Length: 109
Image 1 (cartoon, rainbow, N blue to C red):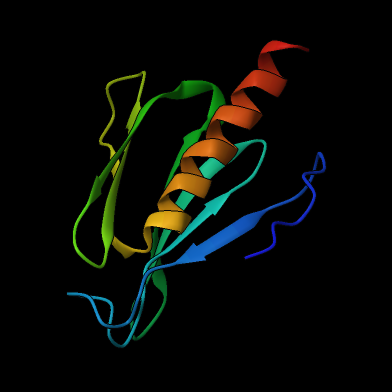
Image 2: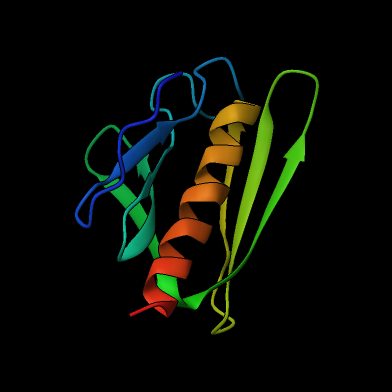
């Protein structure tokens, strides 16, 4: 899968597989941009969103299974982590790499 070039306002969106628990009708999406990491869980009417600013991301944990990976993004402020399951291993690794890239760019400012 080719990756788009990272610009200062680029947002990458990663959708969970519809074949995983809780994602059949409304798959969870993780959006990563230079400002924040956002988890979007659509519902029949509306959606639920959780976000953590890039500067406040403490760690990213990836648990891989046979087919799908779970991702946990912890906040440095002690808030609830962002949890998502049903992503491919490649997507989970890209999410972690993007977060690390944006954190490094933020530290260099």
